[in-house]
Image (cartoon, rainbow, N blue to C red):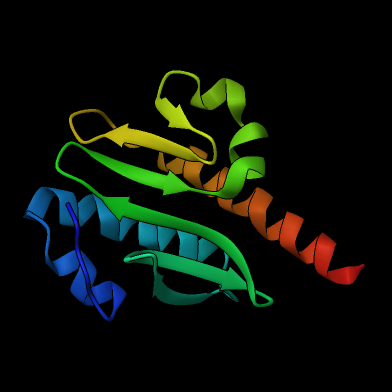
Length: 121
């Protein structure tokens, strides 16, 4: 789905109701685990920055939700993500399976710590 939107709310509203609920839940997980991150649209998808550094992105598609937590975010959770289709720095969660919200929370927490640690240097 090639979606262009000026806000995350409008982005999510473009999806069917079931997908919309999943996207909202992912958004909530990110906000809960990265409360200081700024939310924006980048590369035509919801994006989060912390200390002006990219934290992660997510996007809805017809059959999956993509999560983009940079290569390090995926590398650190390689074992847990191994059952999902992946690319370098991306993972696809099929819409017809349970979305691993707890795992997404752990990835967000990892990325927050990584960004904050690098920012201190």
